[in-house]
Image (cartoon, rainbow over all chains, first blue to last red; front, side, top):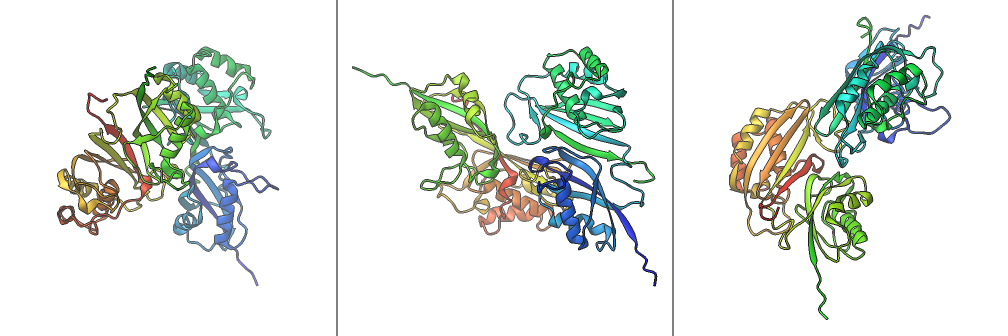
Length: 258
Length: 258
């Protein structure tokens, strides 16, 4: 008898408030509350057997997501794809929300198939912090010099060795990354730093944001940011701006996989 | 010997995330966590003697404020007025923020001197709730008919007996109130209902919002809202939309007191 098992690969886009989580990635051997852990628990409950989740970005403790992407493989998966979103949302805690779900080719891998990601760093640049934004932004009471920050940001565009904006973590093959876009916008008391890159080194978005904030405070000049980049010295870049201001906004895939 | 006591009257504008509070007003004889209780505790700590706080609006449990106003009287008050904001913010929990403080005439009373107040009700009208707005908005997945809601809202403008939009609570002298403005705005998945009135009956903002939502869902017509208003029957108005969507945005005072 030949038993044909249909392995299915399902891609799910999620948003979450990272405040109460120890980051995305499950830490084996610990009982810490992670996004991955909660997702695996909920998906396994639906599948009635263990499901393993692959995440596009391993967001740190306290970092949020407006558009994180995960995928999981399962044979015998019992929930029709068009009902995965509502099935998941009915059992997920309210700080994790499924936005969409779709079946993808077998070779889709949330992390390795990604061709670009965008992150947003949010600064609350009013005299007193907003009680509504306190978990989703970094409060800087002193008025930041946005044009100077913009100038410094433009010096980071393109393909560079971003070692100066990297915290030591998992070893990587290369510290060269391509930064496609970096945009700063002020909207009332909020300042957004929007970064689009083919990939991000560990803490890169937060270290770039922290460095731009130093420019905005007049502590370093935009030109010094070019020097810092060229130095490849992580002691000169940063410090990393706090996790709560950061959100993984979107993950991009090649059209054939999307 | 004549001891001259200078009684000072200080007005403070505050914002708060009401999620973790049992409303503004302290409930005598209980140990519930209230905005007033926390403020009195902090102000008394600064004054080194008991300070009583008067609030402009007695927001319900879970209701927020972007611009609540309080005042307190104190003789021998030790903190210069221009330092009250930072002194308070240094000891307040992070979900209550002091925005400004100023000395006002002796006859200023945060509640009785107010000539108008504005409230904002926030609806999240996307298919799935945003994890970032879950504590600050009411999620309605079905697309609301904004033009119908606007038409219904305009029927409520002006001076009316708003008994149909009132929950029983503290007895009031009159149930007639003047609604100066009621504006509906859509911004992406958010819908704001902005209400400006000389005063609000108990649950009035939430019952008007709840009624407009029923219009937006097609359950009642804009004309029926006029009938409900005319009926003065609180069983026909509402139901009150959930507290978490509501925020007291601004309190208005006569120029002489402001």
